[in-house]
Length: 236
Picture (cartoon, helix red, strand yellow):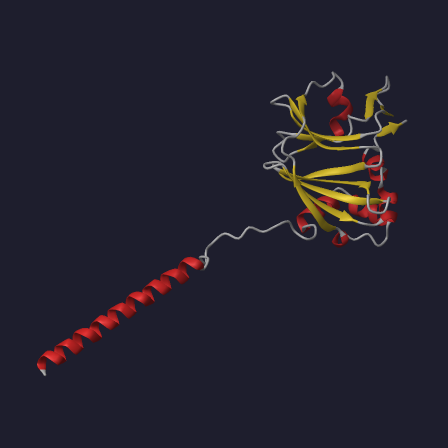
């Protein structure tokens, strides 16, 4: 009787141990399958323009100008469309003409730390000072190019290039490594135009596109804000 009792107790202990091992194994498997609570979640592009981006345009006066032309103009109507990465931006040596800064200086867009700037105009507008010190702008190439210039390294990178069907109105920095450009481009789907905001991360050369698919708005803005921005230049 004593032997049977000892054997039963041993068997019960063995069953409990095996069950505990199985429970621990199941818990470990579940723990490995579930993400940790402090894991990093990577978010995609915002579906609409951020308040920070909108504020940049408002500060420059672009919002007031747009609403004067388009009463129902609303930044919330710009929707995220796509993203793409520029594996390599076309780079060239920056060798400015003697009068470059005197002519284009007031219109260059410097980064917050002043180490780099965006050149929106020199590719297709020849701006020079006349004998009276007045800035005269002569239209040149029908295409448009936006360049990022690093004077210290003496390099210029092409950020955007568009044919005659597109326009670039303005650009702003949100921080030292991110900028936004606003302009218009052709709408391949319906043959009209659309207003586009390019949000560019310079660290990974990633472009996020936001668009306002409104042909009327695009027609009223295309090239017009640029004239306002260059109002100190007599354009020919």
